[in-house]
Length: 300
Image 1: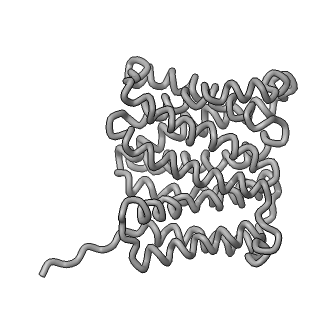
Image 2 (image 1 turned 90 degrees about the vertical axis):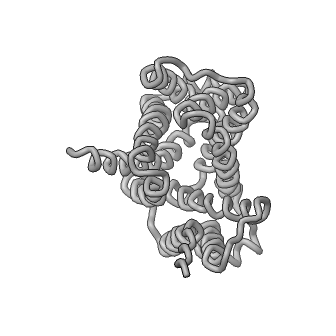
């Protein structure tokens, strides 16, 4: 296998693993409290990333005090809050539909950039934002957006919407940190700090009882989420960024909800109805338009 083919295979593998997190998380959320599941997931992830960092960089990356506040915020938004809401939402929300709602994250980031950074949206990107929001409304309402005005949003869906904003915050904060650290270092420390932030809440919310009654399937899901979907997938994805560049590697992220919907159907027998397909098309087309870069004007 050539190196280029291997890189593409690893990129597809990384997004397939990330798609699988929604199915695995859905299964785990039925048996374990959200704080316990989140803490144990990142206990496994932190241990794996610690050994990976030592193997790759010769030691655990040095943590500078100037980076501690931002890394703590990364751990708060990208690990603690995100995963609490991730497991809370997946108690009631099907895996595929939840993953499609998370696909709206670039739209939220584009709106933030326009409101607070003065970035111009333009007609195409603005149309993409509207399409994504329409798709999210279709997904949240199971195909009847007017239902949102009469009955509101279900609690589980609110948790998934919270995931969107939490991951958007993590992504926006991560740009400044990764300008000074390698991606592996930033991910490792954010996982460790996020795990530490989760510990008090998980202990108070029944961690010991959840560990005592966990079965082999639960431990398998935790290892998958912590080792395969965090450590291995991030390693493959960042290798793809190094070989192909961030823009070309980033295109593969759009496959995450596709894998999640397929795996939810194949493993959990989740139905793929008209509202899911319609919402998926609107969201993914909207995200594509939102992320399009304007063509450079030809020189006169």
